[in-house]
Picture (cartoon, rainbow, N blue to C red):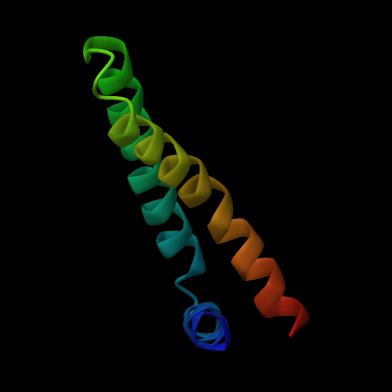
Length: 74
C-alpha cells in the first residue's frame, strides 16, 4: 500500500492528478459498461466475468479520489 501512496504522491506533485484521475475513471466506466453489457446479453453460465468487471469498474471510479485524499493526508 505504501508503494501505491508513493506513486499517487508523485503524480500529485507533478500536477497530473486531474489527468490520471479522469483516465482511471474512464477505464472504470468502460469496465462497468462492459460488465453490464455482458451480464445483460450473456447467458446464466457467464456470471463471474460480468460481476468481476462491475466490481473493478466501481473500484476504479471511486479509487482515484480516495487515493488522492490519502496521499494528501500522508
